[in-house]
Length: 142
Image (cartoon, rainbow, N blue to C red; front, side, top):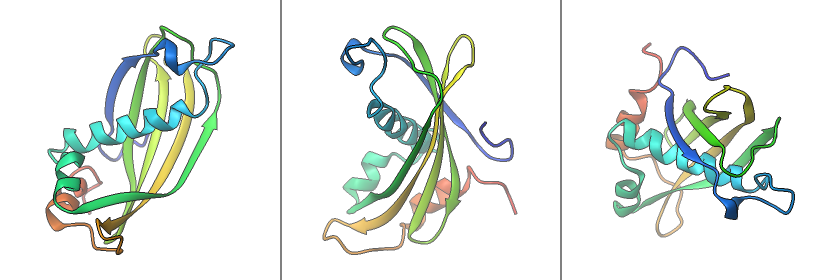
């Protein structure tokens, strides 16, 4: 369940045929792609496009991804991907996720991903202030 004390972004989409396996269900690896889309949508919703972040000379490299699979999703199903920030540090950010059925609200997958900011040269770096400040707008006010 997403937190109620911070901004949670939602985006919806239909499961595409190419995302399913021979059993007609979404392949487990595709949920990580859904997490990525949720994360990109989150930053755009806060006015800080991740594409612009990359163009400015940085990447958020994935250090860890966790996914808990509950109920399989199927081709043609409309899903909602929710994303929020669980933790934000000077050089790292942790996102939380929930993938649910648009109609019933049934939870298919929950997860989180931990990212480290690096330069395009591969050096660990502080998250640029402009982007970090935009992300802070989604966190509880202290």
